Image (tube, rainbow, N blue to C red; front, side):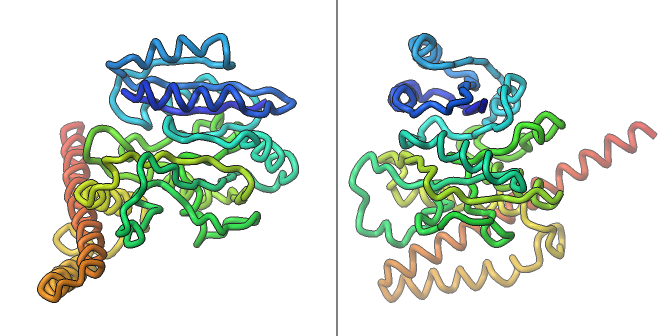
Length: 315
C-alpha cells in the first residue's frame, strides 16, 4: 500500500479539478490512500474535500498554522503502507502515475527516494519570452529528457515537490519537512522538498528517477507576468541560502554577494541601455536571486542572535 500526501490552501476550484483527475487513476494492486492537509482554507475547500469522500480513499485533516510544510508534517501522522508519495494541489497526474512509482519502489529495493517527470500545464498560452525563464525554479518543473536512472548529487535538484516519493519507514523514524522553508504567504524561502532530499542524501539514502511517472503542474495566468517571476527569483534565492552548504561569510552575508550583486547590476544597466530584452530579463532574474540570498542571510543572522539570547537567559 502507498499513501499520497498533499497540502492545500484556498484553491478550491483547482483542487476540485485535480481530484476529478484522481478519480481516473489506475489503482495499485496493493491499494492506496490519499491524505490532504487543509492549511486553514477560508474558501470552499472543505466542501470540495467532502464531495470526494465517497469517490476516493480520502482522509482530510486540518492544520491551521500557516505554512505548507506545517500542513505536510501534520499529514504524515496518517500514513499507511510502505511508500509515501508527495504532490501538490495543482498537479494533474497521468493515469499510470501511481503504478509507475509503485513498480519502481518494488523493483529497486536499494533506493529510498523516487522522483518523476513534472511537465507544464499552461492555463493560457505562454508568451514568446517564456524561453528566457528558468522554468525549474520558476514553475516547479524538471528536465523532461531525464531517463530512468540513479539521481546522483548533481541531479537531486530534479526531484521536486509535485512528484516525489519516499519510503515510509524513513518518515516513521521521525524525519519531517523543515517548517522554516516553503510557502507561507507571499514571500518565503522556497525549496523545502529540495532541502529534505539533500538532507536524506547526506545520510546515505539513494534516489532514482522514474521517467514514466508524470504529473502536469499547472502554470496559472498570473504566473506568466514578469513581475511575478521576479518575485519568484527572490524566493528561490532565499531558499538557496537555506539549503546550500554554508558559504564563507563577511558581515553576516555570503562573501560572493559583494562581488556578484554589483556585477549583475552592471549587466542590468548595460542590457537596458542597449535594449537587449533577453539579457535584461536574465540579469534581473540572477540579481533578484542574489538579493534573496542576502535577505535570507540576514534572517538567519537574526535567528542565531535570538537563539543565543535565549541561551544566555537560561544561564
